Structure formats: C-alpha cells, structure tokens
Image (tube, rainbow, N blue to C red; front, top):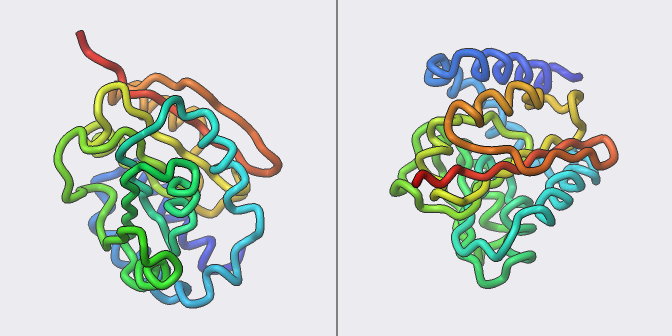
Length: 201
C-alpha cells in the first residue's frame, strides 16, 4: 500500500473498533479524499465495482429509496440507478471534492456532502443502503434503514482494500443492531455481504 492507502487503513481500523473517535479522525480522512478526488477515477482499479454489482443481484425486490454511502465519485450510486431506474437514488460522501466530481459525472442524481455517522435524513428513510469500501456506522445504519430493508457492504479487493472491515466484525455489528446476514460472496478479489433489517412484531 502507498502512504495514502496506509493512512486510510489505519483510520478504518481505529474507527471500526472505537467509533466514538471518528470526530477526531474525520478531518484527516476528508482531507485525504479531497486531495485525490480529481484523479480518483484514473487511479482506482477496473474491478472496483465487481463485488458491489454482484451483491446488488442479491438484493430482493425493487427498492424504492436507495442511499449510497461514501459514494466517492458516484460509481455505486450510478450502478444502483441503472439497476433500478424507478428508484430514488441518493448518495453521500464526507469529501466535498469527491461530491463535486460525482455531480459532474452524473448530474441527474442527487449527491450531498454528509457524514455517514450522522445523516441528515429521517428514521427508516431507505429500503437499501449500499457501501463500497466504506467504514460502517452500524447504529446509524439501523436508524435509516426501514424494517425489512437491506444494507450492502462490498470491498473491491477483499482484505487488501485500504478501507476494509473483516466479515466477522461486520456480522457482529449487524447482529448487535438488528440485522440478519442474508448473503456473503466472493467475486474475483472482492468480497461482499448483504443483510436485512429485522422486522419487529
């Protein structure tokens, strides 16, 4: 890994174990992605969406409201919009520069600057939340995904992805916040997981 990738991995490892430290680490992570935004698409690998798109196939039904978290330059949101043309697809990233790149690439979609740990959306707003190479905040996911809705995590290069969360840690966080894992898959070098928010009777 290069220096930027090592920084992203270090921040990921800390925040996954201690989410309360994210406010202290958000600025260096944001600065990192602001700096690389103009060359992001050129520097990322061609297989960055392979696991993500494979996991989309395992989301049942037709989600009406989709949120792509940590969207970067928008590829995840674009993939979701192509798969479900009638869905209301929104996307958020902590990096303003990444969002500006995404808006230029897909002006028909809604891209907003925002923090995945504290989203400015109502409770239960989404049928599906997708994340490709993103740090998860499980309590906030449980708040914004409606009962019976789904979350999707993908990591382009499996454990070699700079922003990576191991499956056992994902499962633990999901169980704690009321999700059931419905699918885990490996596609090429990438891994992905789909989970469903429990419906309380």
